[in-house]
Length: 308
Length: 169
Image (cartoon, rainbow over all chains, first blue to last red; front, side, top):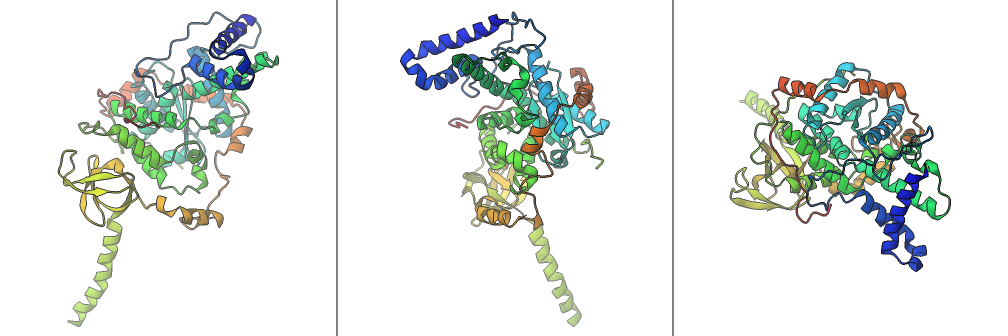
């Protein structure tokens, strides 16, 4: 049971010792540890030159916990672990806002989402999508392919291409493991800090410990760079899927016109760059890339109409 | 004659009203070049300054024909934020918030009582039934493809967009 812990700690400590003298350790250990952790999980979203190189598949499953509580491999989680983590987060969020009780709506959103996800770099995840009961304007992604859109955001849509764009943005977060990496970093730091102060607790490795209370993790911000990256990916996936490429930007335009003091966008505006900034960043990334894309579909007639 | 005059007086304000509602307004999101036609290599015919208010005359593909104070021309869709300017109007927004009123004149919630606020999220309890329902909607890649075919969606080759050069965001 301790092999994993020791392996992990020795790796981290070795990295740390490699970069810091023992004298300096006491002062900037946290910083060095942070660097080591970032190196371990490869958390450099923008600097990787070849985007096609995926995060290495998890192969290190040698350590199966010997007790009933499954330990989570924070250093290199398997896809299965990633999904079970996402399931927990999605279930907590659904505890705050349940699914809209309209099977036809949910099926429709899953159809659009599944098709867009098939254009992503992770087409084989069991993607699932839901519209949740909330008049807030927001959307959420949890690791492993759990994606939820509020009814308030759905109301803003006027065609299927726009839905494809926002689902694409959330799919982008899952593909790039943005949230997972934040949790990994936090847990590896906790484990490392626990070891140093002799207060290492086994439960640092458990999923529940990482997620925190309820669905508060869904109220946390990601790096701005992660949001811009998800915008670029979302637009790219929807375009590949055959949709009119500007769906996502139209939704951003609409959200940008919502008064920022309106409570329905409070959380969205707190956790995301302002829609204007996102539009500028997307516009700069697009440049002339869309000039020859002509036949994208908007499918306004197919957009499922909410019953209430 | 008198009748005609009466009619004109009646009609004139109607026309004005038409003109007002027909023009959509917007704000320049960035500095850009106005083109004489909706193409990247069309002749330049003026410039646009970030924050400048514009009238949107027409949309054609990914281009908007806009009218600035000085001139008329075409810019890319994402160079303009549609709708009224908020960037130049932040003081008004703050005042509105302080009085509990914003924009529309409606009293709005600044604490987000009706939504998924942080307190509500924190208090949430895992809901197994709802997750199971959600998972019950999972579709296969094939089902997704059939749905795409039904809408005549054709997948195309398009490499992922990259961050613009020099864009550190």
